[in-house]
Image (cartoon, rainbow, N blue to C red; front, side, top):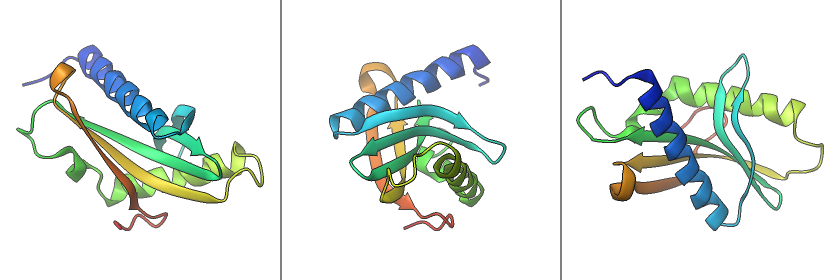
Length: 130
């Protein structure tokens, strides 16, 4: 079944909103959303004290095509890491962070049935799954 692009985008925004609320509930401040570079995109950049989290958000309204975690392949991880390097170089103030982490936040289902799963430190800057 093909989903119209506007419906898919609206579902993606809703998933990112849910992920942001989750991170804020964990004490993070959302610094930026949808940071785009020539290397790739970061869905959410969040900060808590000296920690910067680069979060990749994945949504699957049903699991007919597999788990959303499986879609964060090595190529995607490397693009996120490259975009994060760009962010740290161009946008983060020197000395404003001590540690950077790559998280994956998965939303399964939709609406009231949506379930969120957060994978802190899911991969490293070389794209290796931790």
